[in-house]
Amino acid sequence: MAKGVRIVGCDYDSHAVHFGVLEKEVLYAFRYHSYVGQPSLELLDGIETCLRSIPKPVSLVVIETPIYIQNPRTSFALSRVYLLVELACQKLNLTTVSLGSSRWKKLGLGYARLNKGRVFERMKERFGDIISDSHYADCAGMCLAGQRLVEGSDGSDTVQP
Image (cartoon, rainbow, N blue to C red; front, side, top):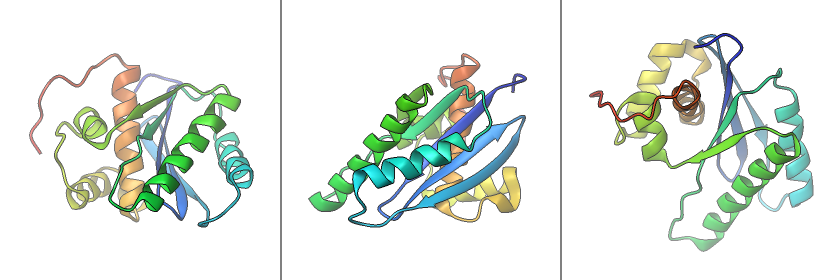
């Protein structure tokens, strides 16, 4: 990774926003705990506070695009968190890219169809105990995808799992 490049990966669910930060092949991770029904401005403030805690400069924030599932309430909640992360990044003048799970897996891990267990195994092997759950594994994978984007690789080469 080029000197001074700092990539942030962001994964979220209805209870927390997870961040991974990759710099010089070292990853650190943290989360902001939220709760269902938390007012949007309060959640935005918490996300913004987390992003402010990351040393500058940040080259890119990779955010997983929301998934839409059968439960519309959950789909709405995930979309809301996604939009608030985007808004917090805009307020802090951070460059973002939104990637679906198959796209960041292809860019960051070389194979678009890895399941959660396989992503977790690969990221645990690479980054060690900082990868304590699947959300941090996803953040790490998004950081690797962001690294490829910043370095100019489009991920068109194929690497088998």
